[in-house]
Length: 503
Image 1 (cartoon, rainbow, N blue to C red):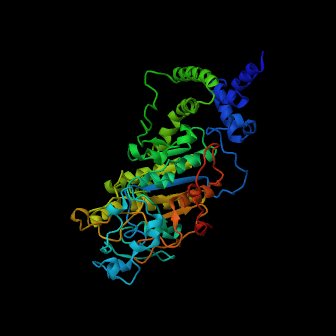
Image 2: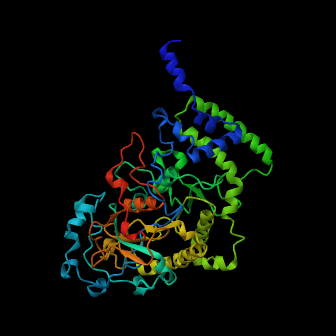
Image 3: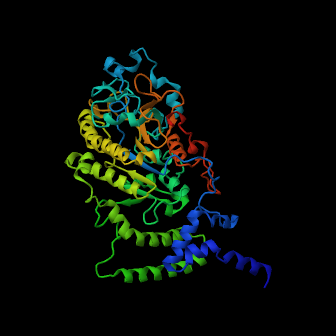
């Protein structure tokens, strides 16, 4: 046998890790391989030949002490107004109806921050968004809340009772002024750039599982539509790291996830064993096919999920007082309440990352009738979110869970004038507010600020990947170490940890 044949034979032989995880002995072999992989006992066998996106990251053990085990990421699609929620501005009432240049403040449109951060898809000379000059007054009252004294508007009576558990970041900014920013806050990339995996996918990639019977990354209520799939996607990390959308119907939480009535458990197990053996033969022949390897894992996980997922989303055993706490007894709050209660149940059962969409695509997008829309929308999530925080706290789950509450951008301080508008605000990426709570997060804290008109995030502010870096840091992951051979991430992709909000 010549050297070329020897080389060919060596490169085509499956490693012990591949043999256990992809060939195994039916379900027993797969489970054994998975347990070894989670323990890290097989990672030492990885060589440069087998280094690929489907392999776990080679992180320095204990480089960051984790404060949290899990994340609940609550995203409100459409862009809630930071001004009418968590960053009220008295100057908007004082100078209502005046243009920016008629106030004692610097004209925010002329600020160097505008061109430094703003990136319109439309040519600058025809862009009219973000630069509406006529100041639109606050549409709701506000006052200081809790012992911390943070200003929150009157549309959040229930959440106002929980502000001493929250840490507000008032100087967030992004660069896209349209709804592709929904993907951007999850991926860190503007729509004109090459896309990156989502924050949930990175968490999935970097962490081991806490429950072999459930996905590590679950999505409730999303993605909001087909073109926001990137918000839960894993891209080059491999399909096994993408979010798994679940429905809240315990009889059918996952498409095709229920065994047919005519099929017994034993019959289905034999069927899956045969599929696994056939896929394993292909896996040996095509060891670098990530889609195939992900499909093999998916079959195994799907089999286990058939009983675990329906139980996880079945809220029939929850007490009446608990469901009322989440607002499930009212039509206006039921949808958000169900998703957030399901999120708590999933966290209890070991899911690492739960991404929750309480409302549909663009729901908070109030170009017109902002007062009417935000009154209704704030009511729809206020009690459910407050109930979620209270419930997590009383069960001790906030001690090792990070909660993120965010949107893709804020709303303009100026009145939107397009189409003769008189009652709304347009998209505003230049400054907005998010909040975090739970493990490792300061309580009753406010970090950063926007200018007196609520236009620009002052100082360096925080680009959306700073939120990623902070979340991953609390999980014990250094975003700069989450690298894939052959893939070069930009410095802005890594973000910076928001140290001031950490305990």
